[in-house]
Length: 240
Image 1 (spheres, rainbow, N blue to C red):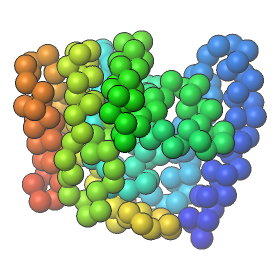
Image 2 (cartoon, rainbow, N blue to C red):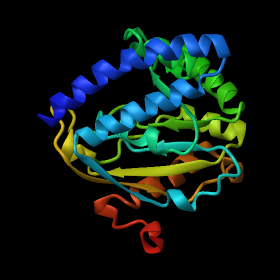
Image 3 (tube, rainbow, N blue to C red):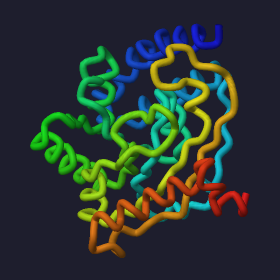
Image 4 (tube, one colour):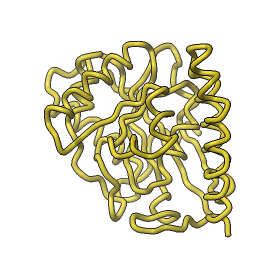
């Protein structure tokens, strides 16, 4: 029943938000009002589904610079759970197929989200360059570097494109570990179960301290993995 109510909520509120948000954005040239309204819709939908979230480490992040948040990915609920919890407006690299969804595709374009085609190397490189331009405007970026959902919660290999972006721009990377969503909405499932999840924000990693991309990837991967059950708890648990 909760899943049905969540679906109804999103199906009703998404076009209603677009109904006033699109004209307002076109008139003012500013996306902020529609963006935060959409984040409220997403966050409320997650609550209706009965998903409770514990945040670890977010309050420790200095908000003196923008960040690239790199998170593991185990469930379809990860993006609408994580993104609305971030304190500033973000851009996201999303599969180009999502741009074909009515209303959603237009909204993502207006919000400076970056479409990526992983099947086309040249197009993917162009997406990285576009993301660099958006990040240099001062927006935070959310990336799921595995590129797809893990079927069992273990980390998949990280795609390299977003690490090129980090090294080119010098924007600090915040590794993020999402715990528990694979049980509430596992890959292949259509109905979300209520329950508790945790999101761990690790200490920022400065890409300018790395001359080798693969070493940077290994450092971020190790940080994300440090909070997974097989690796034990994150050191940020000790300060919360």
